[in-house]
Image 1 (cartoon, rainbow, N blue to C red):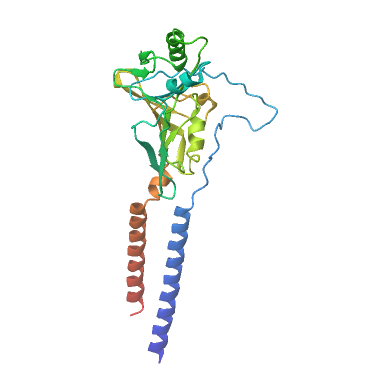
Image 2 (image 1 turned 90 degrees about the vertical axis):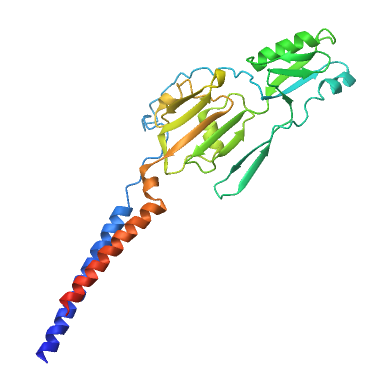
Length: 285
């Protein structure tokens, strides 16, 4: 009988020990999983006091120039309605594809390219009456002046408007809706693009947003913009250009939350619990 009582007491001691160990392991796991929330506000260098007014000088946006394979919306209005129909018949859908992406629910999205004049590989567009017009490396205002001068030979006081129809901005990484957007505004800012992408997620690094930009000669430049600082507004990269790509890097917390790391943590905890169970079983024998 005393031997059975001794075994019972040892079993109770082992059970309490196992309970303490499991509780301790659970607390450690919770503390490791729970981290203090990070600051997610933009412009963290702006004082909280509403009495402080901070005025920033932005860099004027550079006018975007036209490159081969761009699509332009060119409208020419004259006093002759029949001529207007002929002059604007080039604003038809072109075979330049569509802009597609994936939203935050993994659903495919497609945005059709707006109709317009496709700039050929040599940098020309073909217009009625005046034929080929060289538009490569020109801004939309410069193209407008060139076309107005040429068409004035045939029509009096023509009204010419030229706009980009394929002003594409791509936003990737830790945003709610990473995809490519057609921007109607020819002077979009970084925040316009991020807003179209649904804002940066809680796991995105606002202090290190990467901007990839196409340069002349097929080159690409890469810069980093700190959206935690108001210096981003004064940056020459605050205004975006056609075909710019923004990439928001994930925070270390995001990397640590991937399934690979979760599986590793679970395996470690399971091994520790197994060891505890073996120790308790030995103590109760």
